[in-house]
Amino acid sequence: MEKKKLTLCVDIGGSRTKAIVVDPQGKPVTERVRLDTPRPALPDAIIEVIEQLAGQSGKYDRVSVGFPGVIHDGVVKTAPNLDPAWAGFDLDRALEAALKKPVRAANDAAVQGLGAISGKGLEMVITLGTGVGCAIYTGGRLAVPLEMAHHPFRKGRTYEDCLGHAALLNGGKKKWNKRLQEAIGCWERLVNYDRLFLGGGNTEFITFELPANVTVSSNQEGMYGGLGLWTERSV
Image (tube, rainbow, N blue to C red; front, side, top):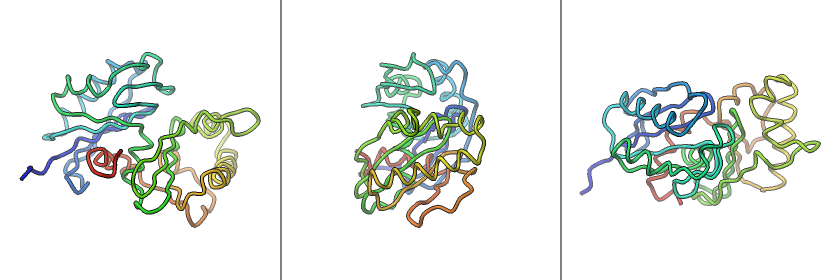
């Protein structure tokens, strides 16, 4: 019988990188640790930060990583909120070499969703942080991570232009909330989801009443969702 494996779940954010170890049921067995994401956020610098976090996290058997960009089979395609140097970088292999453990990395919104969704019907996850992440699930399985952030939204500006952290700082909470409310209406008409989950640090600034089928998910779920990359709920 295979021993119960512990998973080190890493979340690379635009401002902070976090890690926690969870058991096979997704329950934390360590305290969450975090460090500032270095600037410039070059691959070697991020790898070094993850090594530091792993060293503070005790024992673990495998690693999951939520990455803020497009990533296919562990290889980064784009990382707009980190650095252009990530394009073509094999994150899985680099971390396996550094940590001497098996690694699976995926888009951060996709990982967040694995910790938040109910597993029933058509579900959508939007993360609101430095940038805007998006993923869609059917029956608890990731159907597609979408680069919704860079799709046109208002007056030629993208969702990230209007809902990213810079937009919140520059335009203020009132304008940001008005745009988010409008965006939720657009997403519902576009996707016809059964449920929408909003995650990411900027959800704390939401001031309007959300529709009945929209839920704010805890940032912790973005961490615990890393377990899903090693179970039948992942692709």
